[in-house]
Length: 122
Image 1 (cartoon, rainbow, N blue to C red):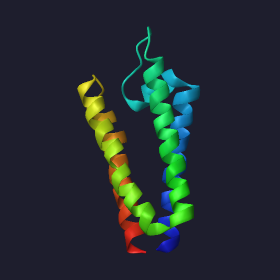
Image 2 (image 1 turned 60 degrees about the vertical axis):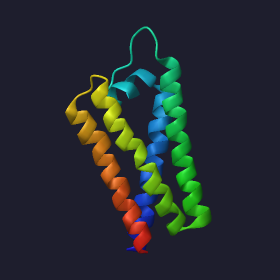
Image 3 (image 1 turned 90 degrees about the vertical axis):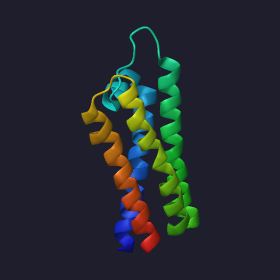
Image 4 (image 1 turned 30 degrees about the vertical axis):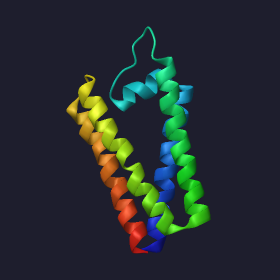
C-alpha cells in the first residue's frame, strides 16, 4: 500500500505540473480542456496565472513528498483538493458543461482525496 500511495501522489503531482505547463505553453488549448474556453480577445493573464498556480502546486507536492514524507503529503493533498472542487464551481458558473465540471474537476478532487486517504494510511 505504501508503494501505491507514493506512486499515486507522484503521478498526481506530475499531472498537475503538466497541466500548469500546458496553460503556460498552449493556453487556449488548455482552457478548452479545462472546460471554459478562453475568449479570443483576451484572458492571457488569467490563463498564465492558472498555469503558474498549477505548476507551483505540482512542484510543491513533489517537494513535500520528497522532503517531509507521506503524512505531510497527505495534508497537502487534503488541502489541495479544494482547487479542483473550486474549479468544478468555476466551470459551472462560467458556461462550461456539467460533464466537464464533474467528469474532470470533481472526479479529480475525489482522486486527490483518495490519494490523501492512502497517504494517511501508510
